[in-house]
Length: 43
Picture (spheres, rainbow, N blue to C red):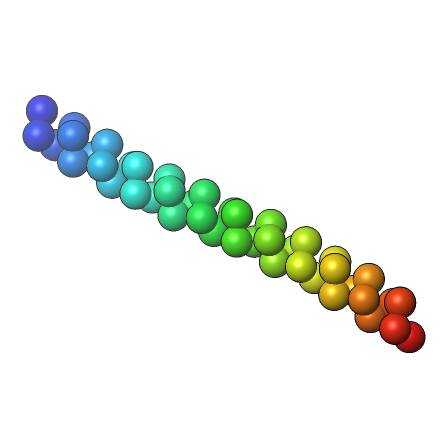
């Protein structure tokens, strides 16, 4: 039973790290699009 709870904790930690990475990645993409828009409007 202890092994199961330990596994659940590991799964939760890994899941939250993946969510953080996806969120960060999505923010980077939207930021890059904004930079592209600014660059296009300046040129």
